[in-house]
Length: 75
Image 1 (cartoon, rainbow, N blue to C red):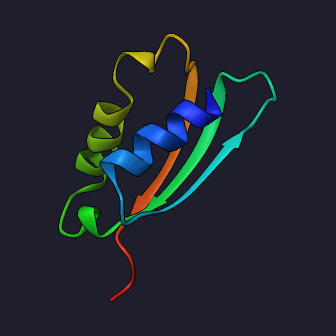
Image 2 (image 1 turned 90 degrees about the vertical axis):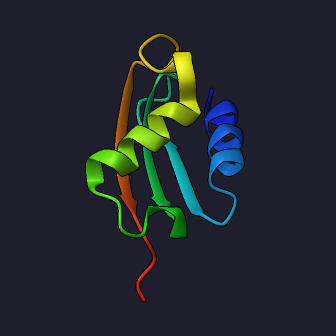
C-alpha cells in the first residue's frame, strides 16, 4: 500500500517533496508529509482534500489511518 500511496501522490503532485511512513508496519496506517507548490494559497482543509482525492476509494478501506502534514514550500 505504501507504493500505491507514493505513486498516487507523485502523480497528483509531481513537483512535491514527499515522505510516506508506515507507522505500524501493518500496511494500513501511514504518516504522509507533502511539500508542494500546488498548495500555495490553499487552506489546510483544501490541501488535505486534494490528497484525499488523489488516494480515492483506498482511503478508509485499505488505508485505515492517514496522518497528513501538507504545506507549500517556503518562499
